[in-house]
Length: 382
Image 1: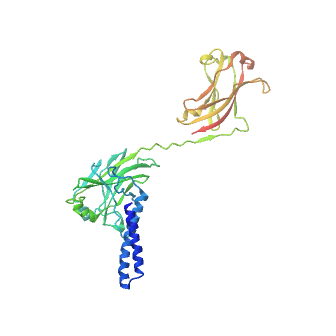
Image 2: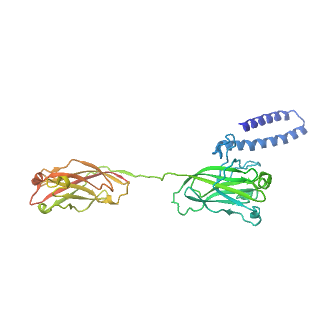
């Protein structure tokens, strides 16, 4: 707000100067033009800086001072920082007393430039189940401004084990230790990216760094640090739901039972058949199963494919099982239309008391009868 008021005041000053230019001599006009040019340049730099601060609105590094200037935004390695015309575009950070969980102390920092070491990568540290390191460019990482700033980036140390569509939500802070005040200047930023490297192309100017009174480079020793807080994100879940319209012709299969009186108590299975790309079979207990044993015949429909389903795959099916008479024109015994979900844990559905033995006798001819199942696959969830 203060900066906005100053800019507004400067604007009034320019208006006054313009009016004065209309009435003064050529020499005085020349002096005023030079002054006006300097004021305009100052307003341009500060108004752009103020606009960026409002637009980016980053998270402050410290909650201790609510009136402090917010931290600047970090940039990916393949992007460039915004430029102000001939102005000082250094980052503005905040201070704190607590040290980060990773620190690197570089003794004789200036020798990195003298030896032509353009980039230094720190040791690896872990945070949020990921491995990280700092990458330091002692003479900057921007070709157009080489040698005037120090660039510092946070990088993932190992991305080979990450899935193809990996993405990380995290908040990281770069620290610059002030060895005089025993405080840390910090720049915090949050990101949600698939890049492996983020950072500050212009963390601090070499001119400001070399001034020992600032406390960052004392006896040619520099201390940098980093903190990373990874926000745990839930694994992406996808589901495919396919609904099928009823077919014009019935999806049914017949199973002819021969020598029924000799089948005994063991279950009998039909041959497998395929409907809607799913494999099925019928399971018959001639003398009943569990509570119906000795009184009625038990009949179940089994989805053979369900043994390969994962925990979330399921199929909703409507089906009717019938006992056919001596010919197609004769009466038949039908179950009610059953609708069930077939899953890996529930692969079979049916009836314990499908038909009582006494009623079944009316459909048996020469110790044989025919079972028919009519299946309508309604819904498949993958």
